[in-house]
Amino acid sequence: MDLTESYKTALPEAVRERYEVRETRNAAAILASIHPGEFSEIVSVLSDFSLSRTDLINPGGSESQLAARLNKAFRDLGWREGRHDTHVTSILRVMPHRPAGETQPTEIKTDVISEGYKVDNVKNRVALDVEWNAKDGNLDRDIGAYRSLYDAGIIDAAVLITRTQDDLRALAVRLATDAGVPGAAKRLGTTTTTNLAKLLPRMTRGDGGGCPILAIAITAQCLEGR
Image 1 (cartoon, one colour):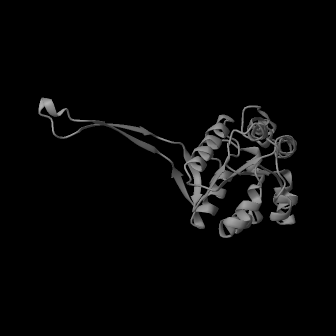
Image 2 (image 1 turned 135 degrees about the horizontal axis):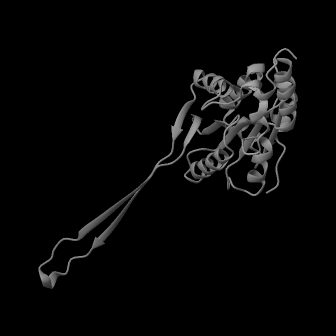
Image 3 (image 1 turned 30 degrees about the vertical axis):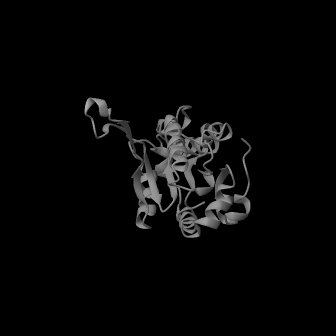
């Protein structure tokens, strides 16, 4: 699947200078056109966000401080965590056989419930996840959820906030060395954590199906006090 570039006109230049952005199916233009309120909130959160030195020196944990800050910013604007479950009821109607004295059909019901994956933030028909430094398998979970939500007609587009790899790794090593804890930045150098390089192959091979996906990667340009 070819990537599109509607974000070059939909997103403000100030955002594009600080983040690396990729998209499928003109996701930015769709969000700006169909959901201008949510799109404006995304731009606002990205504009206000800054990367702290602590984020780079100690990026781990079940939910890093960085991811928690971003999620809180969206929750303060009315976004909420969501989960899409599928409940399918199958009904077999067995018709009566009147010579046997049967007058009414018999129904045999079978219920199948499939619990879906959670999405960090949902508002109206937009889904958004923050994947700063988690296991890269989370990307499969997120994109699979977007595809299911889109196919079910629940969302129109999705946003995935992650990070770049090489520039942040170099910055983390430098900051950790300056702080006298050179081993603290090690986790950002692993090849099994979420980042834009891991996300792009999933986008280009069409894992999201028809769902437009906007990927926004935090870069070294987001560092506070630059």
